[in-house]
Length: 199
Image (cartoon, rainbow, N blue to C red; front, side, top):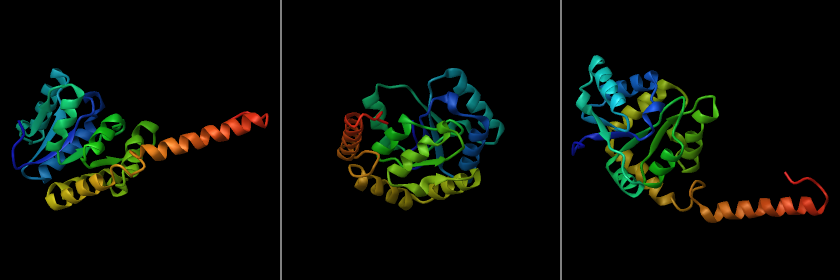
């Protein structure tokens, strides 16, 4: 149900994470980015209806909101190839959903808040090698989303950067994770043998 030539912004976070302030920001991004759509998870019929009605009150054609049905995980991951840019939520951001998007090569735009739940996505994005995609203000988030939504070459560059570093970036480098974890276990064992409390 996605238009062939549109810029596809997406967010597959649960609809309970979409606060009005964030949704207003997304509608502003759509208004400033012609030929774009917002692809969301349609896991709650009532929320779908309310979001479409609210978009219409803000002057956005509700048909520019596209809702994806829940699918088994392999099928859900496969459809990420149709998305251009993942827009994160605030104050409760993407966690596993951001990892999924980054793993599938979709750049993620996020805005860090003050709480743990609002900073996880920024940590994931930085660990994937895209620190420039972590914004400090709503204005920066909006402007970067609009600029990327209007620049397919820039989006392609971000996708290529993610693909090139997928197996070696800190986020997905399993051999490095294993090595660091083993080193910590060794430190704890050494502390135990010295009669200290491992920490």
